[in-house]
Image (cartoon, rainbow, N blue to C red; front, top):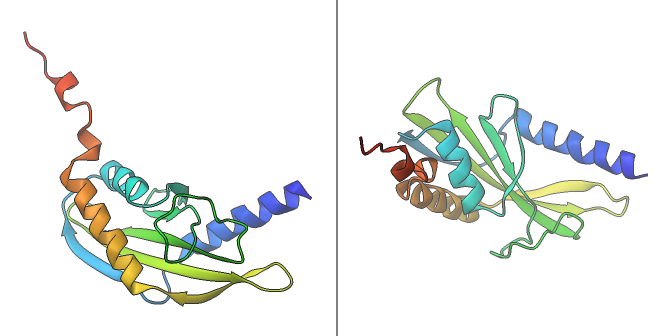
Length: 147
């Protein structure tokens, strides 16, 4: 039973990372590293739940729709998560963010209800704010050699 649940969750993550269909918000000309974008998205959301093999598509953990709570809502009747897609082969990148709201049907399978552009815009705002604090350069002082 537990293996079936894990397989289902991994399948959903992989399916959700394959394409960005539906409504999203976009920001062009973002001059940050991939690592910095990943850290900023992690901090701006409830944390990372999964990422693609090349690290260009990320999904956040589940949360209750309409809340800023960091409580895990993976098994709730309604749940939401954010998805970030990093486009471009080098800097500056284009960011696309979706906020997806799902509802559990009677058979236990989740189905997409809608895309929340307002929440996606808020996640984008938080990501850009985190980039200003330069999360990819936390050890900047440690890199400076006095002599």
